[in-house]
Image (tube, rainbow, N blue to C red; front, side, top):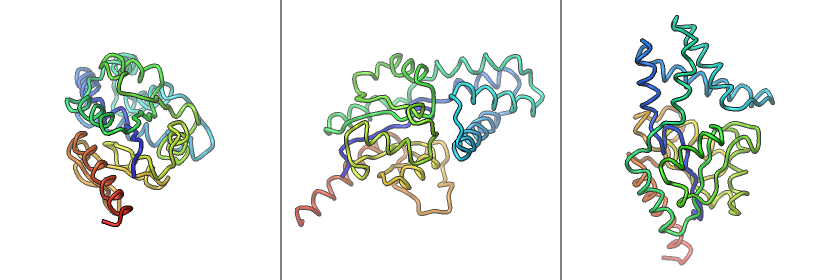
Length: 229
C-alpha cells in the first residue's frame, strides 16, 4: 500500500515542448528531440553499467553535440537549446496531481536524472515547492535511473519500505526500473502512446491526476484485503 509517491520531472511533470521549438527554429527535423533524448538515456545507462558517472548537464551537452553533428547542424548553437531546460512549463494537470497526493496523506517527492539546480528552478517557477516533501537527484547515488539504486535511495530518503513507494512517470524505461526495484508504478502514456517493452503492461493513465487515482485505488484494495473484505 503506497505511503509515498515519487514523480519523474522532465516529460512527466514538465513539458518538453520548448526544447522541440528551439530545435525547430534551428532547422532540426521534428524527430531530433527524440533522437537526442534517446542518445542521452543510452549514454546515461552506459555510464551507469560501466561504473562511471558524469553530471546530467555534461551528458546533455555531449549527446546534443553528437545529435547536431549527425544532422549537420551548427554545434555552436547547442547552448541555446540547453538553456531551455530551465524554462519548461508544467503540464496543466501537474499541480492538481501533486495536491491530490498530499491530500491523500502521501509523502511526495521528485526523483530526477536531471540536475538539482535546474530541477529546483523548475519547481520554484511553477510554485510546486509547497507540495514537495523531498527533492531527490541521482547525483546522490551517482547512478542514473533505471538502475535500482536511485529508487531504493528514494525510499530511504522518505523513510518508507520500497513496497510502500509508488512512481509516476511518462517514460516506460523509468517504470520498468521502478518495478524491478520493487516499487508500484503508473505509466502515463501521453508521450509514448504504446507500451514499449515486451513485458507486462503496468497500470496505465492518460494523465497525472488519473495516475494518482490509480495509486489511491491500489491502496484502497490493499487496505480492504488486509481487513478481509
